[in-house]
Length: 329
Image (cartoon, rainbow, N blue to C red; front, side, top):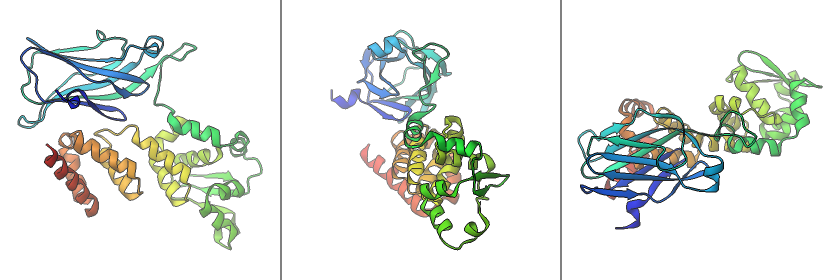
């Protein structure tokens, strides 16, 4: 049997194990795959029932900081009519330490090729100092990036309005800022303040296409006053602003963050965003999620609506991916 039979394909929060066939009585364990901080295994056993197990690899990390997982797990028969799918009711905040923690037993005995599909909704750990579990995905790399590249005094200048010399007008309000800081972070702002434009003359910058909250998050990022929840809430608006004002590190931070939580509810919007703002990794991940992982079959209404309005070049790329996947079967 080839190594491919045990390999689990992964995206940032998704794992799929494709099994060509299961005999009447069989046990099979996957190769390890990484999601979050841990290596994981899937195992299936077929007897009078079909059993599916998901568990982390035994290690010092698992013993000291076992994952507290929320996930949705499915068994898919891709060759059956309408892609026959059996979905577990869902797991919320289950601590997993070994192979006996999560076992799904079902009386439905699939035949032929099956796919074990696991979508991780959240992974939490208890902090070393104790207390309430926290998500490993809350702050991500973007917080570290912002904290290491920004100077703490700048955030205080913004928060306390110290010697502000320009007003930023958002859709529902205004925020005092500093033209030197904005000009340093953005060549577009620098051009505004260096030439005889209305922004220089009136000491104002109008960003009417951003809500007040999004504009506050935009300035907070520029000044280094990072808040993870604020960033996550306004990622798409921040991406638009980063592209508009040519702030490359912010654009890349948004790009990396949008890669982390692709799911069936947002994948079409993410794909459109990736195409619009030239985000190759996000586009590739969305295509892979839709085609390689078969999620395109789970959102027919969203996909049909997308086809009515999407760019023709992007639609052509999707169908090229689908055709390539069919040829590879």
